[in-house]
Picture 1 (cartoon, rainbow, N blue to C red):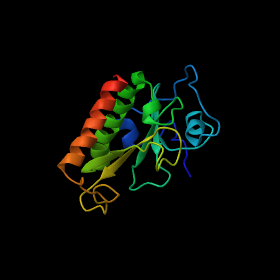
Picture 2 (picture 1 turned 90 degrees about the vertical axis):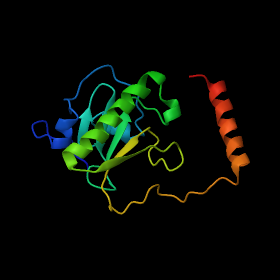
Picture 3 (picture 1 turned 180 degrees about the vertical axis):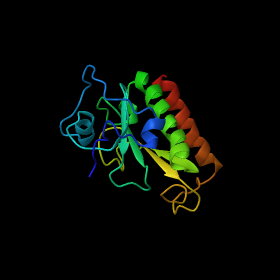
Picture 4 (picture 1 turned 60 degrees about the horizontal axis):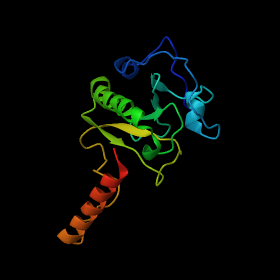
Length: 171
């Protein structure tokens, strides 16, 4: 069961990321049906490692390894595509910070960072997994089979399709 980190007893990871005390500001958009929104609101327990005006980071209930953290924006956005541009930088700044301090605080050799958008997204609230990694920890690269493009023409077609979509979508 997740529990809120006690105010007077912060672990090395929380200290390293500057686990601030809960700041009360204008309440972001939340969904009562969303477990992450309930954690953000303090209505569901979690082991909090980072808590600031932008984001909340807490230990995953079923971690790949000890220290596996989920970082979520305070406001309810289902996917990365739904996240307002103004929050992309702040969110990923915190992701980067957590990845760095995992190495320092937990003695990890590196980290794995991932986010699912709809497919394989167990909770419909944007969350980024930051997982401490070590050599020979049992994980092998990506968790799914990889395959090559049919040929160079196919790869060029896919790249051209994505470039065109990027041009049409704006910044």
